[in-house]
Image 1: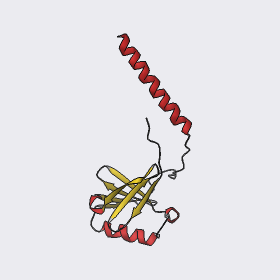
Image 2: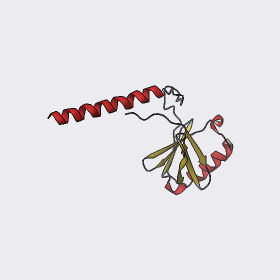
Image 3: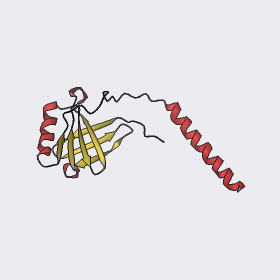
Length: 129
């Protein structure tokens, strides 16, 4: 089963990065800056690493719901001073990254139905053995 893209909202302060997912806004995940182990920067994004967890921050000013680009840069700059940091100036991707995905709830229902059918077939085969 593939992971479906989901919308996420980031709240970035001097103390922490809070990630809220569109599917579960009631239970945000808070990453204190101490938990962020390294920062990478490319032309369009900041990559924050917390162990194996990746937090992707879009640098596009149009992606900001509150605050401004300068405040974001100041917070990141302060963290860069105390964390491993890499900046990639060369173009890493041939095509632009987009976050526009079509979502068809019917596909999800069909996938669940197919999984249930496979489980039933496996039960039947186990009984016949």
